[in-house]
Image (tube, rainbow, N blue to C red; front, side):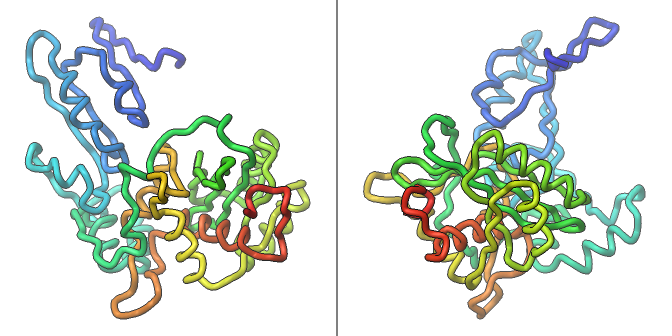
Length: 309
């Protein structure tokens, strides 16, 4: 387990590696490679991986399995690939009720992407200023003065817990994400409590409508704060943090391991001709919005706490 290597009886080896930091994939000479969920991998992963396919002096194949994620780097590289499209509805091993629940819940471009595997073109993005080259980066825990949690309850939809740090300049960084379906509330609270203890979090921002989750968190010792405020107010707060400031840096960055949050930034759209976002593909973003609204409320301002600068 520690080596992440599978050794076969014929002497061949299969190496298991993460693409969170593509540069770490450099080094091995491989006969072939397989990238799973490539659409969630950072840009540059493909270029580095195909550069390793030179074992025995041959150019080996690279296989990809993935759901498209808008028209990101994967779309741009598709001309270098042979693409096979397969819809969720084609899978004979999925329960019909599950497939129908997706068809009932999804629509438009998100349906085309998530169910039919198409490279959907998302127009009317809520966060058009989001740029993976600017907003995705790694930062050290030592750079931050305080930490908090951003939470969204869920069971059929994913439950979300984001760990957010804030540095001395008031900039936020999303360090990690818990993004799981089918988890009992007790499991979500347990995970949040572990983070709270490890990082000495100042607060957990939770949707004010999730009274049960707030109560359970408080009972466990987590400072859960109900997040009120209009959706549009929260969106504008996040938009402001995404803007690049005079020093050339935004006030919000995201660790590359937060793949669902990144995916949602790339596909969260407005309803046509309405000042209202489509209620899809927004669970991690909702959590971040709750966090923005909760920390902006005057009722919870603590001047000694850098979250409320």
